[in-house]
Image (tube, rainbow, N blue to C red):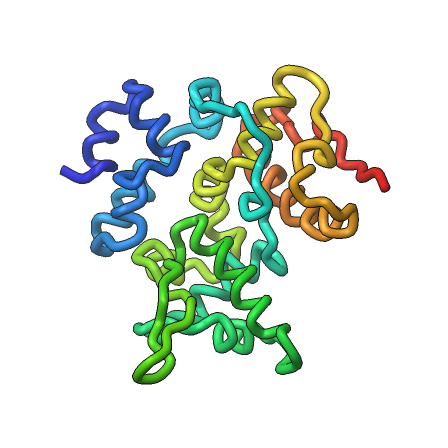
Length: 240
C-alpha cells in the first residue's frame, strides 16, 4: 500500500498527518509520480479530513526558526503557479526550461524576465507537488533547470479555475512553512508578517510577496468552519 492507502486505514494515527505536514518523501511520492487512480485516491483522502484536523496537526510540527527566503512564495500570483504552470507544461512531456516556461506564462521576452517568471512560478508549483523541478537537456552538452508536470498537476488540469480545486489547494498549502508558522504563532498571540518574513531583507520584497502569503492564508481560512479566521489575527503591516 502507498502512503495514502495506509493513511486512509489509520486516519486517527497522528504520525501520518505529521509526515504529510512535514512533506516527508513518502507523502510526496504518489503526488509527484503516481498513477491517475493513485492520485485521485490521495486527493479523496485529503478532502475527507477537515481542515481543522490539519491545523491541530501543526501542534506536532517543529517551528523553531523563521522561514527561509525560498519558503516564502515568490510566484507572480497563486493562479499563475497553480493553474497556468500545469497548463503550460501539459503538452511538454519532457518539461520546459525556465525561460521557455516564463514565455508560455506571458512574461515579456526582455532581459531576464522570462527566466525569473518561469523560476518563481515553477518553484511554487514544485513546492505544492504539481510540478517537478529538474535539470533538462538544452542541447547535446548542456542542461538547465526547468520543470515538468507531476502526476498531481496532470490530475488537477480537469479543474480549470483555482476556485474549482480550492479544497485540495488549501490542503496542499497548509504544508508551506510560512503558512504553518503564521498560523502557529497566531494561536499563541500576536504575530507579524514583517517579522516572520525577516529573511527577505528588503521591505519592498516583503511587500511584493505579501500578496501571495495573504492569499494562502485566505484559502486556508475558507476551508474552516464559519467563525474560524487566521487572516485577521496576523499583523500585515511592513516597516521601513
